[in-house]
Length: 92
Image (cartoon, rainbow, N blue to C red; front, top):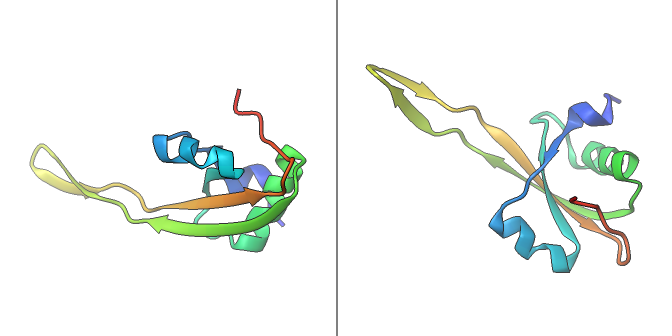
């Protein structure tokens, strides 16, 4: 298994993710090649919590134009992680 810090890139703090906090759900940017089992093990090892469910979503990159050339932002993968009741991640 890779390092958990290579699998879980960062905790994502958006308006939607803060609305999920009362349900004990957290949103992360993760490595595109990581599967749900690897994401679960990585979050448990980094934050010392118990994960009950993992849902993933791939956000496709958008087309952007810079001056006269067309480009594309990279595709990214999000993971919604459900924690066991009583566990908490300090957002700080």
